[in-house]
Length: 165
Image (cartoon, rainbow, N blue to C red; front, side):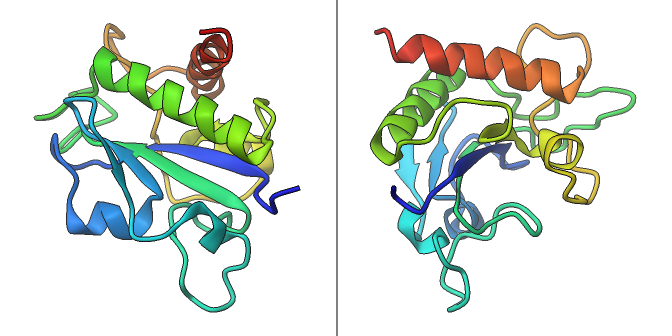
């Protein structure tokens, strides 16, 4: 057992490329061109967060969880929906799902709603209060943000598909 029990999926709310702040908060970030960038902390740094050296990606839910994000959604507005200047794209979602599948295999993390979930699913699924986070509730082609669990389920199906590739 690795000591890592889950993965929380995010968008950065930034531009198309990784920023210094993104690297501080996520273990891995997928840029809009599909490039994977490592964050400042290794996933193992989140096994224990008592030393203060870890990727703080999810309020009160960082211990034992890897934070993986996609660059984008700068200026996005949930209601009325506006995708912002740098909406997510299918190339980066494909790379993102493949990366998460690899991390699940590497660290023995099962792909379930409780263990691999979007930031927007943390509150309804784990009961850990968040501050109005709506990442990831929108994917390219959607007219507006959807139900967090339904969008998370779509991503988990894509992640599982990578186990068979």
